[in-house]
Image (cartoon, rainbow, N blue to C red; front, side, top):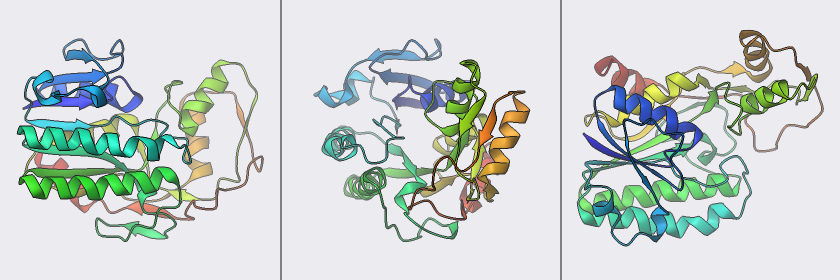
Length: 276
């Protein structure tokens, strides 16, 4: 397939582009800058929201994998609401131009406070501007896809574990603190149980999903089981041979963070079984 990946220079984009290239796809990687993108991809630096004819600019791809998003880890940034009309306009242009499939990166934060296994039809009651905007874009994307009779995949992401210091997750922040020589990392009590997936596995799941056309709709990119935050972070520190220690209780839990939540992995396991 010819796949255009937006936000390709970001933390997720870099690994996903690499996986798609390894699968033999022709990848058009676009972002404001593309210096960290695999050189096997065709790179296009632009502001995709300002392009009048993005489908033509990106060489008329078969698939759009839309990862681009501002302030993903700043859950109440106004950017989420400000940018929503721009995402809509961009997706609409791509759909009207002849794209065959639209896949968009979502988030478990669309769901809001919930206990248990999140399925594709679990009701969404988001509790942050990030969650509200992602959920709105999910509904917009599904509507656009139906109107233009094209395939739609919503990739609902969970908690990613990776040791890059350039991401915004707690694992990236711990890596950055370790490299700065800090001895302690302020932390919550870490009792919440969430769905964690290693960065490499996350990228492989996304690449496998967009590489097939049999399973669509909302697809959880997940491990399928919960793990206590404190346990996973302590394991991460040990695996990477860091000396930094967690300072438990420095921060309270966020009120909208679920006590125990994980993704239903039925769909992604079917995809992986067919796309090893």
